Image 1 (cartoon, rainbow, N blue to C red):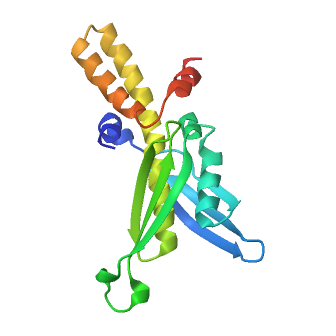
Image 2: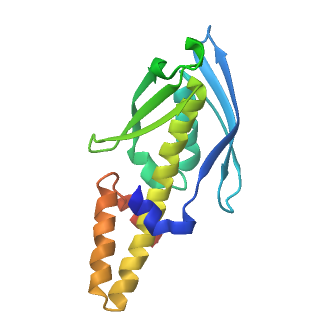
Image 3: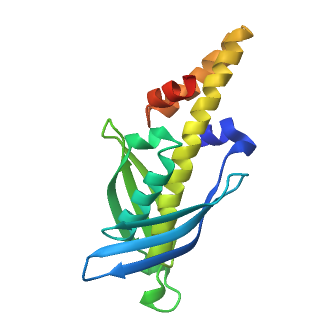
Length: 189
């Protein structure tokens, strides 16, 4: 995460989920989600709507469909695990207001897990936030990789071996999580 923030600086894009709606159908065993995704920059808001076998599945799948077109590295990940922990030790009044920590694990093509977590007093809010954090990181990591690719080229043209090496090392760290080979091909043509 540090590399992504360092490379993008003020160009880092925050993602926010607003107006989240969840409709559950116990008979059909499905969850329907709708929400608005807004960004911390000039990108236009997008509407998300999806159906899944549970709220997490519905939101994750619908966000994948929406963002994979523009951020092809997302196609390399899949949802792998979900864990919830209720923190009863942090109770203020009753057991029903206990904070909930949600952890999700995504898996890349090399079967490596990438973890994201969030804590809130609502299971839904914590789950939505963990998914939001995952997409925010993955989208910005792809953007940072492309930026570093340009920086490497620029540094090489200026005969700045020190910068070329530093940028290449940062790129190598990012590709430990996801391969950006398809991203490079897509942005070369």
